[in-house]
Length: 88
Image (cartoon, rainbow, N blue to C red; front, side, top):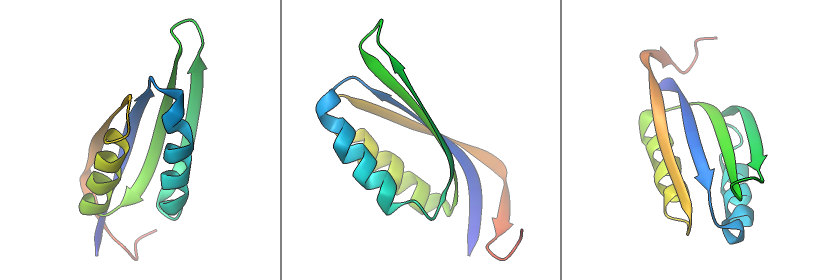
């Protein structure tokens, strides 16, 4: 299977969605390389960046699910290089 590296940028404007986001990210934990969350109290939002290594369809599915939560925006930026799953 072919995988790609991607960064998913998430902006959370509704705190009610935070537990849903954390639960979903837990479901995808095997594909997550790293995560950075920044609460921006001045604007009342949270900014999260996730780095993943997964097939394109899986990354798109995760991004779409995140963006479906109330008050959540999510976009993915993909590497141009594709990797065979057994490459390290």
